[in-house]
Each structure stands twice: as C-alpha cells, then as structure tokens.
Length: 420
Image (tube, rainbow, N blue to C red; front, side):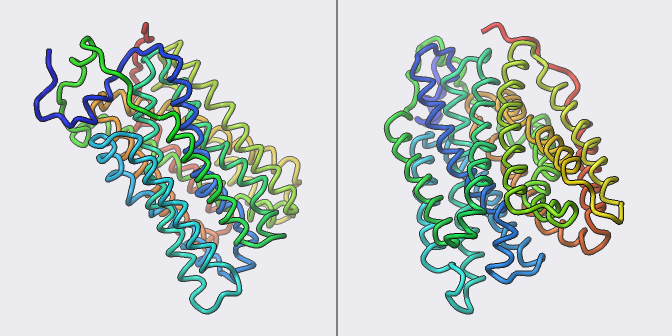
C-alpha cells in the first residue's frame, strides 16, 4: 500500500518503525540534551525567583508576570511548532528553536541585566517571552523523533527518559542558578543558559536524522483524521496541562514558600528543589519502564492525579498553622509532593502520541504542550493573587483541587501490554 500522494515528504520519512538500530539511542540522547537545555531555562530561571525579585526590585505580581511570560511564549508557540514538525521534520525545527532561544538569551544578557536603566523590566519580559516562544519547539520535535525511532514496547521508557531532561535541566538550574545569580549576577545566568543551548545544537547536528522507511512501514503513514478533531487527544492534552498547575506552583514559588513558612536559607532551598528534580527524573524513568511492561499507562496517570491531590492537600493543611513549620518535615513533604506531581509526564506524552497516530505526533504533542504552558502562565498569575487572598493555604488547596479535577479527564481503560 502506497502513501497518499499529498502526504508531506517529512511526514513520509518519519515512519512509526519497529526500528532496532543502535542509532536510536543517539537520537534519544540528542533529544534529552535539547530538552534539558531548554528546561534549564524555563525551570531554572523561576528557581532564582528570590534573587530575581530582589535584584530587579519586583513585587510578587511583577515577578509572576515575568515568569508567566516565559510559559506564555511556549504556550503560543507549541502548536505551530508541532504542525511545522510534522511537515518539515524534527531536525530543522529543533535547530531553529535552539538557535532562536540562544539569541533570546543573548538579548537578555545584553539588555536585561540589573542596573541597566528604566526599561530593564520591559526587556526582561520581552526576552523571557521570546525565549519561551522559540524554545518551545524542542518538546514536540524531540518527541516526534523518539516516536519514529522506537517501537511501541520501548516508547514509554524512551519518552520517559526524554522527559527526565525536564527535571535534569531543572535540577541543574536549581543547583547552580540561584548561587550564580547571587554571586555573579543575571548576565552570568543568561550566558550559562545560552551555552547549554548551543551545546545541544551540536548534538542535534551530529546525531539527529530521519529514520529510513521500509515498504512494510509505509502503510502506517496513510493520512488520518487530524489529532485536533480527536476527543481522546483533547482529554489527554487538557489533563496533562491541568496537572501541571500544582507542579509549576511548587517549582516557581516553592523557594519563597520554604523561606517564608520554614525559614529556609538559600542553600537549603536549592538543595530541596534539586531533590525534587532528581527524584522526578528517577520516577519518570521507572514509570516509563513499568508501564511499557504492564500496559497500565492510563491507570497510572489517574493514580498520579489522585496522589498529587492528596499531597498538595496536606501541604495546604500544614500552611494553616500560625507558627512556622519545622523545616525538615516541611521540606520532606514538599519534595514528596514535587516528585509525585512531576513523575508522569513521559507516560502521558507517550499515550498522547499513540492516540494521535504516527503522522500527527508533532501536532498532538504541540497541543499537549500548549495546554501545559498555558496552564504554566495562568498559574504564575494566579499564585500571587491567592497569596494575597488567603496565603499559602489558598495556593496549595487550590492546586490540590485542580489535580483532583484532572482525575476523571484521564481515561480509565488501559491499553493492552505491547508485544513489539
């Protein structure tokens, strides 16, 4: 059976193969590097929120807007980048996005360092928006490459390894950026992040290419209904996005919470948030392997939503106390909540890509990530308002409610165990 005559060339080359070439691991490594470098940007900069607020003389509302614009840029760019990935291929889109992000960081380094004048906040906002808009390309493009190179029995593991790049990059950011910002300034922060992006460009150039198409795999490339018309794809995308609300609240404002509620030092904040990212990385790999073997992706997603709701509920109840909580207990609870609410992403993206079909992977992942980063933006604006309303209890109880609402969005039926 031949592919449809009107199917885009890039789509035809990216068949959903049961490929066993060892090169697939190099493709995965390039995808991990690309995602880790961008994660260090969108997860690492928010971790510097305490220093950022001080050095730029920002209110909580201004801080939320600046950090939210980074996520808004990703949300606006994800779906167009995903559609372009399905048409033009992963390599071109990844290179364009990583080079564009590097240019945005260079702009921040040149024009948005503290002490550079009255337009400082404006340039900070513009630079962060552009970094998100251009860097959002790495999510859908790297995901499409992995789905093309790995068979179904390995996709959950491969996508989860790719998703460990998010906490890996975030962990690097949490460990290094607050201290770097405090001691060397934000020019050094933006320069270090730009260097990471440019290093990833080299790996993409060297390793990322489209897999060869065999005649037996061409039948899988027949045109299908657009992923944007699938109710299942929309349910998975919306659930994925909403379950990121408690995650981004914890990553972006967890440092301030630990400082205010537990009297934590900057070093303690960096260590605890690094533990969140490292724990999430381990949990993502383990969950991808486990769901590949047992075919339990959808029940696993529902369990993560419910577990997140319960842990953030506990955080909210602990915030109702008038006296500061003991830091070891509070830190352990925050790390546990952060790991659980960050452990499911690889499984969710695998299920989303499979639901969309091989020719619509970029579009589906772009939709999912648009929902994710749209929620990131809204959450960054909502947290300061909730803080002003009823303090940290309002923040954590609201995010617990959002996680609970996600539970029915993830389908309960599970896919059978893959045999490929």
